[in-house]
Image (cartoon, rainbow, N blue to C red; front, side, top):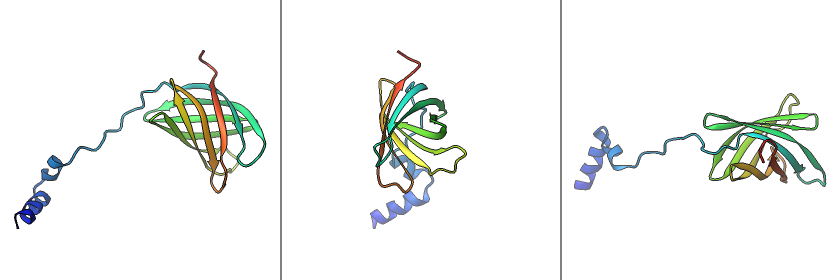
Length: 135
């Protein structure tokens, strides 16, 4: 009976439950300085074809805007940096291409190797980024 009354009091008394449960994490802007220009080398999923190009990364609040130029194609995406992984959802600009996702390793404030796929594909491609504007 005491347990039932205590549970009821927690539900009815404003702030009672909050005092007993931890605060949710506060979103903070990423601390990494991964912004900049990168050279891109990659492999198309399920094919024996390589490609190269360039990318630009810019911080936009708690996220990053990423733009790739591969041949005549441009892709734009939004990324989240968490635990040394940059995850980006992207889509080709103007061509009606399928949306995709890429997950990159981040070390020493630089984007490195990643794997990617597009909606509906059953294979993954790879990309390797090298900072073009920093030694």
